[in-house]
Amino acid sequence: MVKKRPSLASRRESVIQRIPILKIRNYLIIPIQIDLDDLSAAQLQKDILQKIDKTGAQGVIIDVSVVEMIDSYLGRILGETARMAALMDAKVVLCGMQPAVAITLVELGLSLEGVHSALNLEGAITMMENILGE
Amino acid sequence: MHEERYINSEIIPILEERDVVICRQACREWARRIGFNLVDQTRITTAASELARNIHEYAGAGEVIIQEVEDETRRGIKITFQDQGPGLDDVEEAMKEGYTSHKGMGMGLPGSKKLMDEFYIQSEPEKGTSVTIYKWLPI
Amino acid sequence: MVITNQLEIIKELASIGTAIIRERTINTICQMVAEAVVDHTAFQRSVVSLLEKDNTFNRIGFGGLTPEQTQKLKKIPRSTAEEKEANLRDEFLISQSYYIPHDKTQLDGLKSEREYDETAEWHPDDFLFIPLYDPAKRMIGMISVDDPRDGKRPTPISLLPMEILANLAAVAVENINNLKKMEDTLRKLREQQKVVMELSTPVIDIWEKILVLPLIGTVDSVRAQQIMENVLLKISATESSVIIIDITGVPVIDTLVASHLIKTVEAVRLIGAETIITGINPEIAQTLVHLGVDLKEINTKANLARGIETALKLTNRKVEEIQ
Ligand SMILES: Nc1ncnc2c1ncn2[C@@H]1O[C@H](COP(=O)(O)OP(=O)(O)OP(=O)(O)O)[C@@H](O)[C@H]1O
Ligand SMILES: [Mg+2]
Image (cartoon, rainbow over all chains, first blue to last red):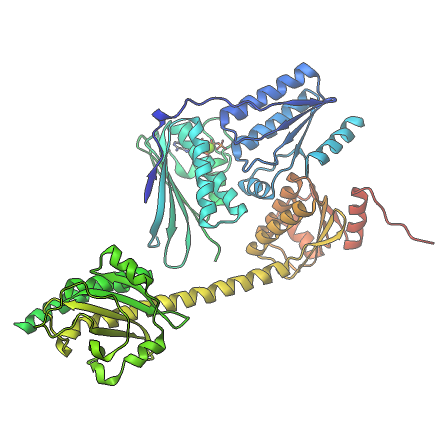
């Protein structure tokens, strides 16, 4: 049995999906709730950096608990964002990464060096308060 | 190579950015249905994302064929990524970790090879590229 | 004339037989046999049934029947092996088949809808069964047929094609059953293997948020991968923040295993926990350095006790002696 997906003509144009960025105290929280395509991931990086600039946030928590895979592109975006944010004096903490995603990521050859991680959002907030409290 | 039987298949065209997401989601769905555990599902999905992206990025368009496959002793998934794009001058070079002609990380091809059980690449300059990957259910 | 005709039929049956034996599902086999009977023998209706575990005959393949007739037939309660055997008496035996005239049986069947032809030898309520035997000569199923085109009673010669089909079907069914048995055994073996695997990588919950994995014996790359998965799943399930991997019991490590170990440490970090490795013996220390494995990122402690001490510190606790 061979199924063929409907041809593209019947599908809508690619649209960039925006992820909401929340601000709490002096840091940002970004829950990634959708399967990001490359353009939307790149947009997210821009949005985060701009938000840091506008709000003077000193930290960024990216919640990836519902993200089902991180490939080289999204991995690169996350790593870069952490380094770029650091240059702007903001720390990045990733939280909630699923075991399967972490295993795949390191097998792929990526380890997101320099990014802090927490088990869950609660842990990330504690970690952030600790980092910023020093 | 082994003698194979195909139980089911699906073809997904890669014509624009969004199709990379559609393709990897379809691969996960297939992997789940075939019976792979969560970690293998994620390995398969990630490899598919890398290879579908290469089609979109370097060839502009192509197609992905997902198949449930079995041979005498095993059952698994076979995914073929094919395009009629520019092809590769030096396949061996492209398979090296860190090699990129653009500004990628050169992780896609070697990385997806590591995530899968079998990996075959065929490419001819000006003709196109075809990458085939397999994952078998654990025995 | 008759004989050449028979030969032709037997040749055809042989090629059908090859197809039947290649088939991989029991249902298709029965269906193919039922259709072959109708296409290549005098009988216009056929049903292929197999003996199930509960000792009843399950009707599986149907030839020459309308869908309605098939439905009707499926509703008739399955006969049991005992009922059938009571009727399969030697007096009815022709060649290997049983021909049971209508006035000698209480068996229930689908009533023939055909007009009763007074001149024909075959009565619409007659029964003809061709048994399927396994190699031990136990009956595993049967073909039952009705409505001969020629209206004749069966003879050893006219039965021959059907008996060939019955034997082929029996072999095919037997093959599949053996395959299933083998697969079952294999599956059980795999399950046992999995249990052994899990036992050999026991991740222990020693304290709130602290896990210990005492590794014992040689680690190959299959086990190393299993270890990585177990460790990560356990951390995530228990929301632990530290895992101590004690390798006191591991005599040697090669590059592949070392690289798996490092991947595990990295993956643990990515999900938000920390790894402490304890019990690295001199040989392993030498190997790791000679292999150029970069251990600076890894938290190592001499022994399990010190590892636990560190883990408690990391989780904001400490051990004190009570005076
Ligand atoms: N389908 C293809 N058609 C033509 N060239 C390809 C194709 N796939 C890969 N290549 C070439 O092989 C190189 C290596 O590919 P690979 O996916 O490993 O890395 P990358 O795409 O450059 O970076 P990354 O995937 O890490 O973002 C690419 O830079 C590109 O030149
Ligand atoms: Mg790539």
